[in-house]
Image (tube, rainbow, N blue to C red; front, side, top):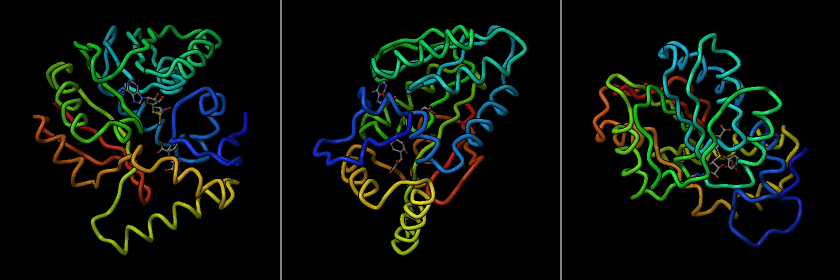
Length: 235
Ligand SMILES: C[S@@+](CC[C@H](N)C(=O)[O-])C[C@H]1O[C@@H](n2cnc3c(N)ncnc32)[C@H](O)[C@@H]1O
Ligand SMILES: O=C(O)C(=O)C[C@]1(C(=O)O)C=C[C@@H](O)C=C1
């Protein structure tokens, strides 16, 4: 279904509710520049670090697109676990897993309180940005602890720049991108308001510091388009 969530006047903050979940795949494809390519890179790097029967977690899996694609592309068995606290998202994830015949353990839980361990790979694309900063630092430590030795954490984030001028230019370029995807100025401004204080982006430097402070030995940017970045951290 086509994303028309912000065509009407919306006064509440952004939520991953039924309205958003029902159009979410279209929303991501049209709101995140190079989303498909970023997902393909995530899977390429993931497969390079995985062996038969490894445990893979997707934190904030939404409709499970990434784990389904990983399951399709892997020619060995993986234990795939998707965690999300939106029932509306997980209902769609369940249907998609069934349709594609991919076995994924879908858990309706809060990333901050649920347990995950023995992970060879943890993925979290465009989800940490929705976790309050103080809790975000704790979550990264939890992710670190859940990973095997040399385990991998791949994550993507909307980012900001320390340079005010470049930051403003990046936001303008991003909103122009949204227009090319068919969103109107009204939809763009409504969503911007709804996301205020809900999506809290860090700079690249802050993301790097958070990762290294948690104990990871390596941090690398594997993809960047203006204000959207994908990183790999190695334990
Ligand atoms: C932008 S979406 C992630 C997109 C997805 N990773 C993908 O690439 O298709 C963020 C997801 O994180 C989930 N989420 C946010 N905070 C959460 C929390 N504290 N615990 C569990 N899930 C959470 C939301 O329900 C939403 O589905
Ligand atoms: O910042 C925006 O305006 C966006 O639409 C970005 C973004 C994201 O980065 O996750 C925000 C919410 C939706 O989940 C999809 C895309």
